[in-house]
Length: 384
Image 1: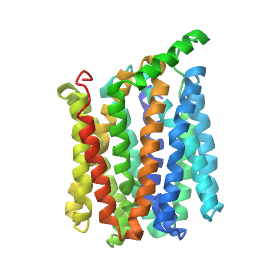
Image 2: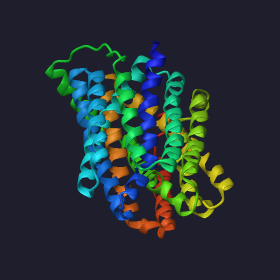
Image 3: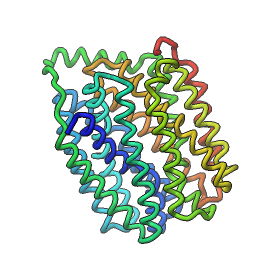
Image 4: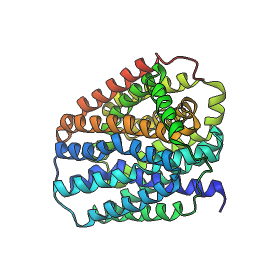
C-alpha cells in the first residue's frame, strides 16, 4: 500500500466518523428523549474535552516521538468508549461515555495532521488531495446514516460509528513513525520557551480568537441542523444529502487549493471564509424551507470549512517550527475546537428552545462569524 493510500484511508475513516457524529449525534440524543437544552449540555460536555486533551496528547507526542502509537491507542480506546453507547440510556452515563470517547478521539487528528504534513513535506497541493478523502468519507457516512436511521432506528448510529472506528484502528496499523532526533532536557526547555513566544505572538492571537468565534458559529449547524431539517418536515435521508452537498463543495475546494494558494494570501483566504460563513448562517433560517435555496447555501461550505481549514493548516505549519508542530496542532484543536465548540454548543442549546429559537440561534452564529471576520482583518500580511 502506498503512502498516499495509507494516509487517505486514515482520513477517510476518521472523517466518516465525524460525518456521523457532527450530523446525527443530536438525532441520536433526541431519540433518547432529551430536551434541546440537555442535548446542548451533552454536546458541550462532549466538546469540552478538546480544550485540554489535544495539548496533553501533543506534549506526549513531542516528548516521545511516538505519534503513530498515540494515534493507535486513541483509535482503540475511542472505539471501546463509543461502543458502550449500545447499553446506555441515561443522561449521566451517555454524557460520560461521549466525553471519554472524545478524550481519546482528540488524540488522533493533531498527530495525523503532523504526520501527514511531515511525510508530504508540507506540500499543500498533495495534502489537499489526501484531505479530500476525509471529505468523501464524511459524505458516505452522512448519506448512509440518514438512510439507516430512517429504515431502522437510532441504534444504527452506534453500529456505524463502531465500525468506522474499528476500520480506522486497522488503518493506523499500516502507518509508520516519522524519523526524528531525540531531544535532551535542555533543548526541551528552550523549545517550551520558544513555543510560548509563538503563542503570545500577536498574529497567532488574532488567528486563534477568530478561529474560536468561527467554531462557536458552527454550533447550531453541527449540533442542531438535522433537527432543524426535521422541524421543516424533511425526510431523514435528505439530511445526509444536504450535508453531503456541502461536503461535495468542500471536496472541489480541496482539489483546487493548490491553485488558490498561488493567487491568494492566507489573510485573504481566512477573512473571506469567515465573511462567507457569517452570510451563510444569516440566510439559513430564512431560506431553509426552500430545498433549492438551501442546496445553494450549502455550497458555501467550501469556504466555511475547506478553504478555512487548508489556510489554517498552512498558517500553523508556517508559524510553528518542526519540533513544535504537534503542540501547535494540539493548541489549535484544543483552543479553537474545544473552547469554541463547547461554548457554542452550550449557548445554542439554551437558545434553541426545542426549535422555537432557531432564528435567534442562527443570528448568534452569524454574529460570531462576523466578529471573527473583523478580528481576522487585523492579521498581519506577512503570513502569505
